Image 1 (cartoon, rainbow, N blue to C red):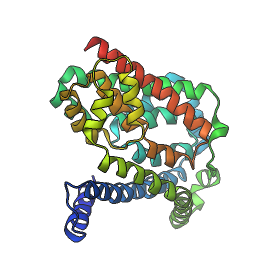
Image 2: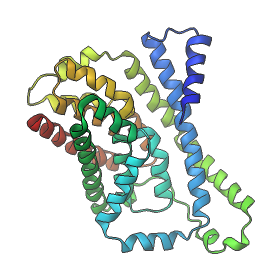
Image 3: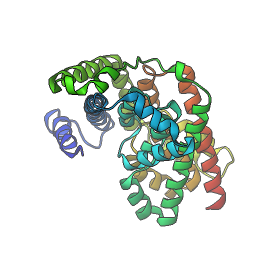
Length: 318
């Protein structure tokens, strides 16, 4: 989807700036520029589209439809939809905001936010090629289970008041659509999108900056040294070390292959990968402007515990 941007940033950083592609600085700068622009584009485009769509559909009627569905069904659908979207943790935030804007139940939106970065078609293909179809299916399955259960738990805690961002109702547009010009819809959608962007863009820059530094300067040997072997605490170390990092699942999988070759158990490696893609510190920095620290802590705690269980399970059976 963003090959053109990747090629443009590659030309800018390595050809124009003259940085060396294999250097720590080159990797960090390339990562920072590429991911910042990509996330900005996704934020603007997705929130704008969701706002336009909301202007045509009665929000309360949609909420009524969802409320009639079994809670577990809604969480399952959100988690499966997450698998279908090729977003990393930070890139999934814009659609998460769109769900909040559409006033979808909070727990259901978290099922999507957790599921989206964990796996997509590319990740499944890479896992299949690196570790076989059994590992690929098992990984996707446990990813969905984590997303569904975590969403159910968060939804049951009645934490809607911990959402800091204002959800502006536009129900009047929905019920009087025949009297509203399309240009008016575009104008309101654009104004709302810009308003949201102004509130979160600085957190995006800070978050991606942290991820870029770690991406460029933290060596593979450092991770393998402290989270390798069959020690009981290895999955815990893997999760703790994975949270400050930031990458898509497809981007981190080559590193996972290297770590397993260096002696890290597969369960520990996959729990590290899940922490990187689903609980990244940059993601927390972006969500800080949208959610309270209490809700972010609960989100990280519930998902982190689920990832730890997966790590121990994989180490036990594989």
